[in-house]
Image 1 (cartoon, rainbow, N blue to C red):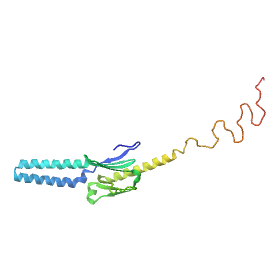
Image 2 (image 1 turned 90 degrees about the vertical axis):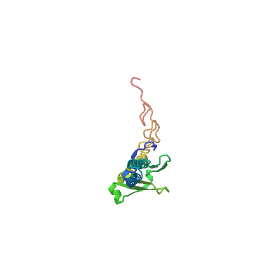
Image 3 (image 1 turned 180 degrees about the horizontal axis):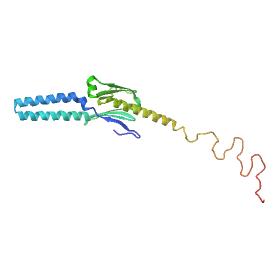
Image 4 (image 1 turned 180 degrees about the vertical axis):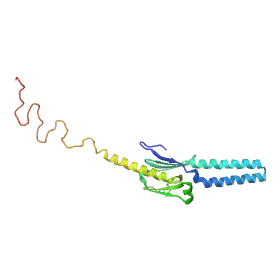
Length: 203
């Protein structure tokens, strides 16, 4: 993700391998079944080899599935990227997030994974969700921090232009050559309301 000026990444993660545990279990069972069938039909050594190949394929596919999905929370945006060869990107401004909901089944709580769903304003995208994320409370905390920092920055930005800016003050105060209204500027050597300037000593 290309960051905007002043933007910082608070959370950057992928779906946890624990969220794909069912995939790994079923894949391992499939590898064992294929290995046993080949061993009974042909040769034990060949069955073991094919079983290991299938198991390795399951591990690689699971890893690619995890790395193909990225979840990012920055100080300005929520960002989801899916795919390796083809890529699908979802993003929204952090100030559009209205509600953050987490969902954990009993098994998910044991595995310490969960789903974080974001309700966003001004968008028709109803599937803005971090799925299978590890420790979902960390994501919620990251979004809360980003929103609080954004609110502070907005307040500072609103006060900055009016505090200490140029031209602030009372009219006629601190301006060179400007006296009180109705009183001409004082001439050098003349007392206000008195006679013309005194002659220098010895004159």
